[in-house]
Amino acid sequence: MAEGNAGAEYRLSATLQLNDQMTGKLRSAASQLKSIDGAVSKLGNRSEVAKLARQFDSLNDLRRQVEQFKQLKQSVSATQQAYNQANAATGQLARQYKAGQAIVGQLTSKHYELKNTFDKSQAATTQLKSKLSDLKSESQKLKANGAIEEYQKLQNQIKATSAELKANQAMTRNTGTELKTLAGGVRQAQTELKNIGKAFEQSKAKAAQLKQELKTQQPMLNRMRQNLAAQGFSTKDFAQSEIQLRRQMESVAQKLRIE
Image (cartoon, rainbow, N blue to C red; front, side):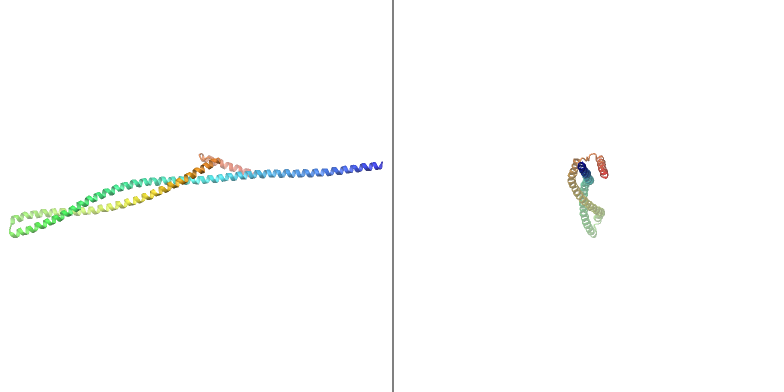
């Protein structure tokens, strides 16, 4: 009887010991499972954070592209305005040059005509001087020969020729003065025309340079516009698109702070 009780107690003790071992294992397994769940949760959060970070970087890169687009657009606008001004100035200078050519032509023609008048006046003066000299010489001969009546007639011719000579000399002086003034006007007009021509060439070259810059900038601007559109940023309603981009960045940044 005593042996039977001892065997029962042994079996009970073994069973309790086995239960304790199983409980410990279960607790350990539960603890490990909890750790695994925590690790999985952390990994999930890290993955979401990384995803949000990439999204923010992408939006930030888009923002930089938008700024570059704005700067290039401003540059294109400034270049276009400068080109329009240079082109208008070139046209105005071309008209001024044409008008200046007409003025120089008119002044040159008038100078040529006045020079002919001056030359003829000088030639007439020379002839009148020679005629007057001959008349005076003849007058002296008549006086010496006592031909009083013929002498007096010749004196009248001398007076008329002398008056004509004085008038012609006065006209020659006036024509010479006018000729000098006109010559100065021609030189001034030619200098102004030369300056206008130089300014025209400079303005023309500047307009050509700006036009070439526009040819380079416009395709770049179009490519940037297309690239932005491909990323969902419309440049047609630029202000609204900027607002939308800013809100997206603020939203992602808020989520990153929460995570």
